[in-house]
Image (cartoon, rainbow, N blue to C red):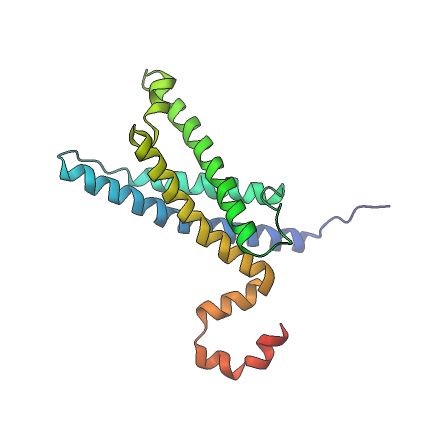
Amino acid sequence: MKAHLPSKAEAQARAAHEMKELIILTAYLCVAFGAILFFKAAVLQGVGIYMAPWGLAIIKAFLVAKFILMARVTRIGERFQARPLIWPTLYKSAIFLVVVWVLTVIEEAIIALLHGRSIMEAITSIGGGTLMQLVAALVLVFMIFFPYFAIESLGEVMGEHTLFRLFFVERRKLRTEEPAIRQS
């Protein structure tokens, strides 16, 4: 039996769809991570420490988005797909929280090595250096992932096109197209 090989047009369409997903997810994460960094910079500025790590939000958002999309290909996080939407949403949010934490540990270790610091010193400084700051950072990242995976789960059930139209098409236009939406 021969395996189905995608045509050039199918491969291009799939690549375009994956690029669009990467851009959308990167933008979402960049705004979210940027908001956290902005808040952190504002708090630190209040005590006389000035920082502007905006490039870090973009880089981290891109890397996390890429890991999420790669994990989707390997079917990581699909354990509770048949259950009510809350379960896959919570599960994916927790799984990718762990992924981000591991990536952060690796990132901090590399930065420590580049700056001549010990890896343990860098790892203990994650989240600000205290257990409370680490837990707060983890809760914030979980709260960033939760709406993303909730909307993704809704899209899987309702269809991406229907969900997109519900968010971005005027309601009066949807009412005139209501029978078509119910059928799709």
